[in-house]
Length: 314
Length: 93
Image (tube, rainbow over all chains, first blue to last red; front, side, top):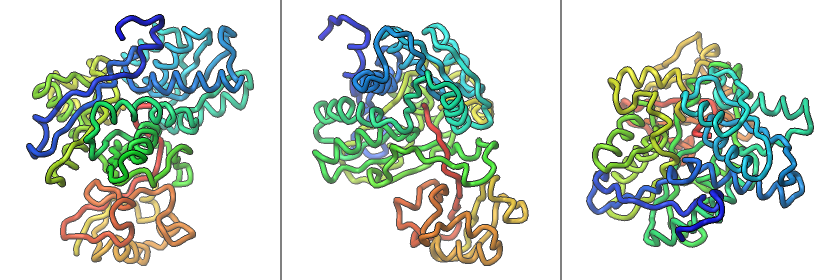
């Protein structure tokens, strides 16, 4: 379909592209799902649409009402929600850590979102706490809360997963980054129902080291939607590797993707090295546009790595 | 096996402020037993009430989460690096 009534109809249906040149083994094929092709520029458009639709179905949101949606986000969910909110007649308030890349803040503003800053040193945990506090103080705010909202994994269960199975029925391994866990839960559950031997590999940033605000372990956080049993493997990919693979995606495959995509590919490549043959699908959450200011492709690797300690590119 | 354990900032107060500790053991469980004997304050932060890992702790051997290896029975090789990180919200959200 090439003609649509609404931008919201453009969400999903993203392509797979071969990045086999990055595979350590010619018998292991790697396909990248380009979520940057979504209209808001990331996979988060899917969950934004689903969360709003479910809230409308439940009577929590009324289209055209100008109600205020509140969400903690480091950028992509906020941008997706801003797009959906604009078209469905809501306002959006995003709690954004103050150390995210400048492009994300700019995008949120031009999409019409109101930005509330949370301390960057407290990471996403800080943004969550601030959002919960704001919601508790004003019950007219609608906190959709991607970490705990079943619409998040459901969006991937009903769209991303079926797309992958239809486009790549031979998939053996699904690899994606772990944030809210919505992508891994939704896609993982769907694919395992159809392919019981499928392996789900999660890649995560070493965020713990950045969270200086953590006073003790009991301030820790596991997203309510996270079910550890859906995963088969979980590994850390460090900022330097993420940037290196983000560069290789562009230089070897012509794929211009964000830094968390580089991390997901690093994980897929590591896992590929343990396979004798087979097919991996790796999800690239967004394109590279929002990270130009990071110098990821242009500056010295040591400089970018050092900057990545201070600025949240995830 | 001689391995290094890297502690997150939030746990260092229980280990005389050290960021990295050299320990001996054939499995993660052995190494943790050695560690909590030397630094008893760490015990409640590593092990939950059920005897398994504390729910807000992630333990990695060379970047692989041990919950998806053999948990506390995960075997170690000389030179392995064990990282303990608190579970926090992260990712491109």
